[in-house]
Image (cartoon, rainbow, N blue to C red; front, side):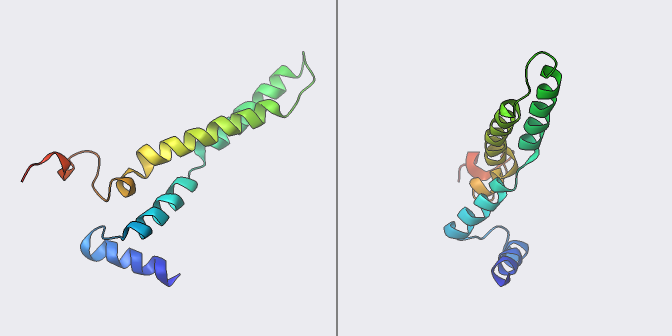
Length: 102
């Protein structure tokens, strides 16, 4: 717990001054905390199973497939959108200092 508070203190004092190892750990936590698309895929698959149950015996495969596709979507969305500032080293995607020349 003290490690996370020291990371928070570093970010508040001087911006995002994480070591590469800390940045990797924070990026992993950020990506793994995404769950929206997995939940939506699971609910969508369950709804599809219920609607399809009148013609075919319902199975769990649509729900599992929706959860799998949603999980992949969560990883991609988390990596490129939600956790982009950790991935790029603290610079935001819009207006970053990467396109300015000294």
